Length: 242
Image 1 (cartoon, rainbow, N blue to C red):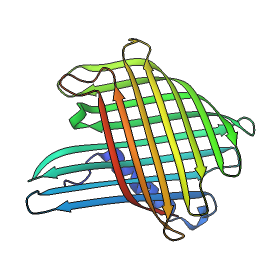
Image 2 (image 1 turned 180 degrees about the vertical axis):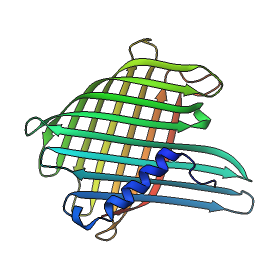
Image 3 (image 1 turned 45 degrees about the horizontal axis):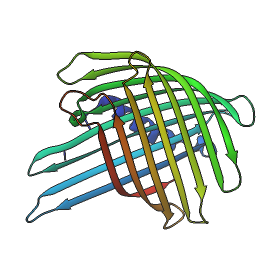
Image 4 (image 1 turned 90 degrees about the horizontal axis):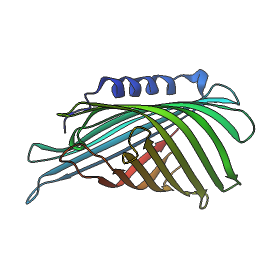
């Protein structure tokens, strides 16, 4: 499996490691790292590798930063079958106990989906719609701007509207469930929309290690020429939280 080559994602992962190693920030940060690897030899030769790092830093009771980077890929008989990377940063500040404002930037690269570079920037409002000891439901709405460089095609740029929701439930002391859903609509072409969803079930093995099962669905109504509209990813990974 070729190593991650994108400088943005690599730099972000290095920054996360440096921050998480700082003893002065011990009470202000959270970090989780997940990793999965599979290899098969015999009738089928297959290697698959994926990783993700999510880091949260609380500047104050009202302001926090969220950084995330990851990638996955697969190859058979020395031929790359899938390769994608991403990096996300988000800064949010509470206005009230449940309402907040945020800015968010995401970069993606997915060669086999025809995306060389995709930059997605948004500024918006969020609210904790339902919050109990075991449940949390949040909703976000934001205008934004997307700049997309496609492989073998011209750049695509447009203003966008984004809706996002996340539901989290603590099932018991060792298990939790989350459901994310995101809708991004181009304001330049009403036929151009994206829908992303992820279902996750996490079960703790120790105070640090957990097993994470996730299923992702990605839909692009106007994909690059020759690419499919829908992608799905089913993954089981080892998760370490600090």
